[in-house]
Length: 218
Image 1 (tube, rainbow, N blue to C red):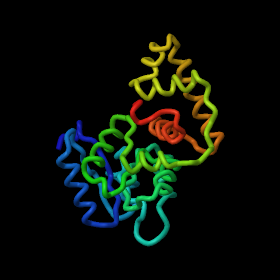
Image 2 (image 1 turned 180 degrees about the horizontal axis):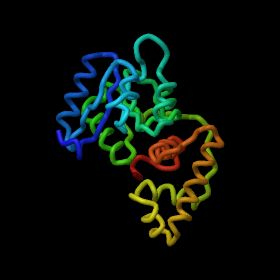
Image 3 (image 1 turned 120 degrees about the vertical axis):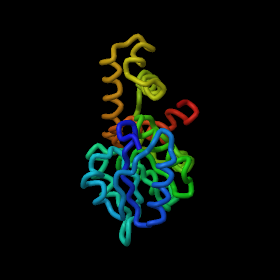
Image 4 (image 1 turned 60 degrees about the vertical axis):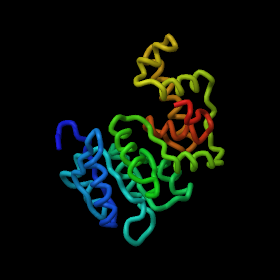
């Protein structure tokens, strides 16, 4: 395994068969994915070598107890990209994980293709929406939606479609600073509704939830 080019991940699940299966999928992936640490609880993500891995694949339900939303929040607050990989198929669990800051949410029924694709997307910093997550967002009927100006909505969609703020600026004849100001303003509006969106992936999720964009627009 080329440690220079491999994507480094931690896998946390209390079922040995799941740990083994995810490790095998990662080993077979292209580009390569290196599982640097794995275990039945979140300690694997906080001590070396797991601590240095930017991506964490974690089950939401670890051992006996409530869903691990608190652990998820601590990981995302530390800047980790967390892919929740869970048996839970209800929309509430998926949407709550997004609210807490998860990069994306997959059910274990979605399997190898979607999990590997989600890891590659997290490494590239591009959003990833699994079929189950798309269904949860489509069914979300919460009305805590910020009022975005037309220009804010246009800039937001362009940013989802472009690789950088500079390319958005070129499209609209703006400065990159102005584009960043629009995006900061949108984030403030979401934070004020109690639905923070600190990352690009989180903003994509919010925009889809609120009907501002569709998956086909991305």
